[in-house]
Structure formats: C-alpha cells, structure tokens
Length: 350
Ligand SMILES: Nc1ncnc2c1ncn2[C@@H]1O[C@H](COP(=O)(O)OP(=O)(O)OP(=O)(O)O)[C@@H](O)[C@H]1O
Image (tube, rainbow, N blue to C red; front, side, top):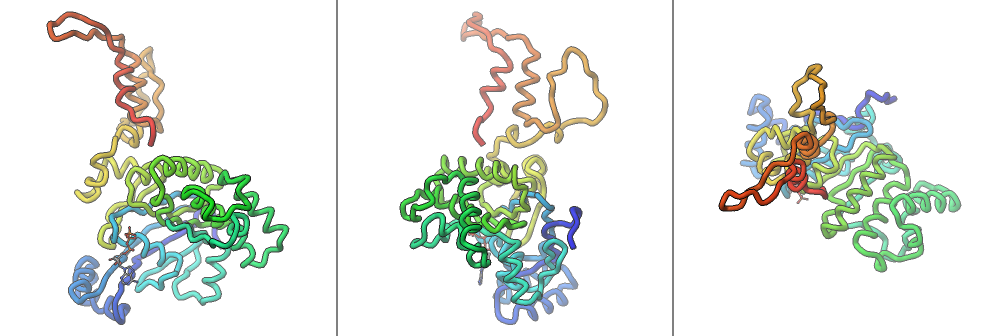
C-alpha cells in the first residue's frame, strides 16, 4: 500500500537493450566491465546491440511534473515504454506506487494500465469514425462503465479541456490543437494516478502549443497528477517541469529543477541545451540568494525566493531614480527609468 512518501514511480538501474538475447548480453557485458556501466554500454554497442536505456535511476514524486528531455534517439520514449511495461526492460527495478511491476503478470499489467496509467502521444491516436464524446468515453467502455456514467464523465473531462459544444464532432472536423485536447480528455477519463505524455504538443504550431501548455498547467494545478512528460524542447521543459531529467545516448546525465539545469549544467551537452535560454526568465531568486536575516530598511524592493531573476531585477531597479541619456555630442536629451530598462529586456511569453 502506498503512502504519501512513496514515490509514484521509482526506477533503479533500469536498462533496455535491443538485440538478440539482450538479457544475457547485458549480464555478460556488466561482468566483463566489472560493473562499470559506461564500459558495459560501449561493449554492447561494439557488439551491435542498442542500449537505448542505460542504468537509469530516478524517482517521480506524487503530484510531480517530471520532464524527460534529450535529443532525438536519446532514449526518452523507450524509457517511458519501459516504465509502463510496454517494453519488458532488460534489467533493473521499476516500482509504481511502491509495487514492483517488473515481471508482473499480464493480467496485472493490463489492470495497471487501464486503471492507474494515462497516456497521451504526439499523434493523437483518435478513432476517426467516433465522435469526440465517443472517443473520450471509449476507455470507460473498455472498463465496463455504464452508458450514463460514461457520458457524464466524458462531459466532465471535455469541459475540463475546453471543448464544450464539440462533443458530436468527428476528429477530421477538428484542428490539430483540438484533436490533442480530445487525446488529453480521453486519457483523463479514467482518472489515472500517473500520466505519461510523449511529445503531446510537438505537432502543433507555436502559438497553439503555448496555449495548450498553459491549459495543461492549469489542469495540472487542479488535478496534481504524477506526470512523466517527454519533450525535446528546452523551453517547454523549463516552462512545465518541477524537475527535468536530461538524457543522452540512453543515459540520464542530469536531473534537476529548471533553475539547476539552466544555472548548473553538469556538462557541455546540458549547457548546449540551455545556452540560448533567457536565464532570467527561468532561474529564481532562491538560486542566487545568500541565506540569513538580511537587513530590512527603506531599500526593500519586496523580493521573494520564487520570483524570477527578471522580475527581481525589475523590482530592484525601481529603487533607482531616472538617469540622464545623452546624444552623440554629450548633450542630455532625455532620461531613462532603470526599471524600464530591466522591463524592456524581459520576454513576456514563455
Ligand atoms: N524496437 C526497437 N528495436 C531496436 N531499436 C530500437 C527500438 N526502439 C527504439 N530503438 C532505438 O533506441 C534508441 C532510442 O530510441 P527512442 O525512440 O527511445 O528515442 P527518443 O529519445 O524517444 O527519440 P525521438 O525524440 O526521436 O522520439 C534509438 O537508437 C532507436 O533507434
């Protein structure tokens, strides 16, 4: 039985190796390398195997929005498929709500997927011959929920994703963004505890994508699901995540909060991701604060630990008087308010 301290997901030393007799090949490679997992992965590659997930260990806390990020082919989808046991995994341990799922019976896994896990993929996966309402209610039908209850629940989640009035439309009559909302509503219909989303917004154009991200955050704000969200877009990761895991060649190279990823990248690969990111928009005051009582005098701009650096800078600048601005000859032609300087450098939309 889980308690609130039990992580929603816990993976220990998880491997997924593709190739013939992969279990045996992994055991032998680990033995040859004396347990050095990098050497074992290199060994497997040299033999023609693909170690798509290499020795991954992490936890997703209850109610946490955990983002997995990495370049194409780094193993993100494979990792998530292992967790949900759509792939068996080649080694390691996976616990969902404290329960070991590796080697669980087919029946138990089907039950787990139906009742506990929700999934949303990039390519909506809607049934073209079913209406929005029927698509959304479908997983409930599979669960054997009665027609009336199905309808009521479908209506509830259709409203939640902002599709009221489109219940009787068919997928072909909807825009890409609306179709993805149907996908989200369908995955929420069974009220899953754990929600997997694999690049759900990447087929959408930037504006719609941002709108859906905002709505997604709103929905998560009220539902507090435990979420594993895959993206290869750093801006999306930073905007959504409580914590981010960065994958490279099957390996998790860093796990951290958005601030940690941006301000303390562990290597050049992670640094490369965040190099064009406006750090002031994502890093929080807590990351640069020196702990202590401090002094509270007339010069207190009212900063809080959770404020972004951009917002904090603008507040601090409000303490200054307007300063003169000169033309090329040195004559004063105007003034500028320091807080306006800081505000002008901020990017409004995330
Ligand atoms: N069934 C499979 N058989 C063999 N190799 C596979 C299989 N599935 C994935 N791979 C390989 O595993 C590696 C990781 O793939 P995966 O799809 O997990 O990456 P990804 O990070 O999700 O990529 P993308 O962002 O492009 O979806 C790739 O080299 C891929 O070719």
